[in-house]
Length: 91
Image 1 (cartoon, helix red, strand yellow):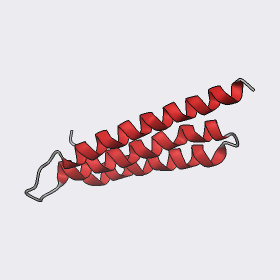
Image 2 (tube, one colour):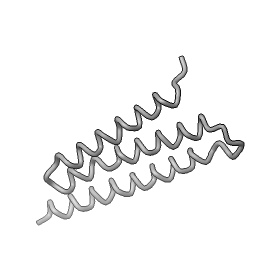
Image 3 (cartoon, helix red, strand yellow):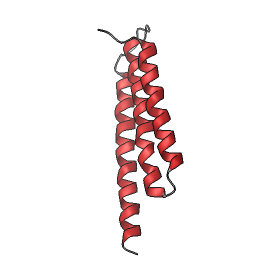
C-alpha cells in the first residue's frame, strides 16, 4: 500500500487543524503552547511529502532537512512552555 501526495496533504492538514484547535481552545498560555508543535508537525509532514513526490531533479533531502529544522524548533518551543509553566508554578 502506498500513500499519494493528496493523502499526505490530508494528514498534514489534519495535524495543523488539531494544533490550531488546541491552541485556540485553551485559555492558559502554557496549555495553548501545546498545540503549536502539532502545527509544526503538520508542516513537517507536508514538507517531507513534497520532497518525496517532487518531480524536480534537485536534492530529495531538502524537505527532510526542513522537517528536522521544524522538529528542533518545536522542541525549543516545548522547552519554553515548560519553563513558563514552571515559573508560574513558583508564584
